[in-house]
Length: 280
Image 1: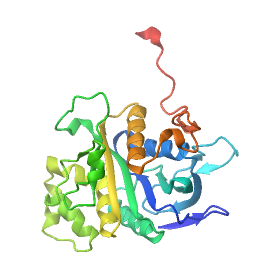
Image 2: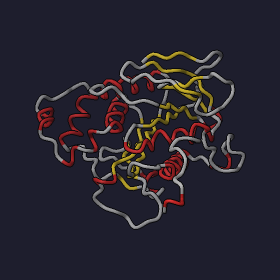
Image 3: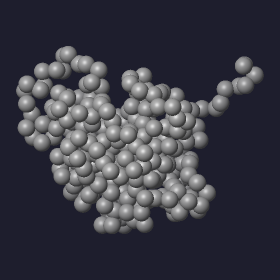
Image 4: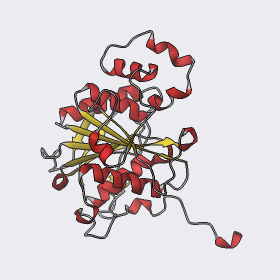
């Protein structure tokens, strides 16, 4: 993965934590990163060039001025006051190249001195095995701090370890072996015989987790279940969970001025106008 620095910018040495989305149902991870970038007043420091990501271009997602300032598929933002770097991904990975993308992201993160990788993503509520009686979105996690994916800090926050993460499950084993450079032909034989347990390790967050872990980085995946539709509320809660883990106070973030989340200007027409209530 190559990158081009914005004029006069560079990756700040104090930003040791990298936060990025893993694309999945509802785009909750991307929306959460949008909220965090906007509310921390993070500044764009680099454009990332990754051949496995589909090209796209649009208007600046966070500011209306200067006019003509464009957004590209992969961009990096720094918030030195919070010690954070963000990567925002605005288009999907080319089919069949997810493992290449995950490896390149892990190599890039290590090359710029990141110590902790926080991956934000979502899971399809249609495959959820258990439903917890709560009005809030339950956050699930896996962490590289233990072989079984447990983390004391995540547990303290009330998060639940993702039950579907099992290092001994065949597809998780295959991912880990690929990331460590020791692929096993025997483990690859399941591709034509997928089972329900193969769903989670087949998602982008799983590949990113395994490859970043193989680079010796601390990795945490924060996940929530959702359905397709208006996922703003899901992204608000996932972004809030990220703040809790990172020790950030929403009221003290530089972009919020004590007034809560800063909603990016690019969200204004995200779902189009609301329905005409007269039809009900």
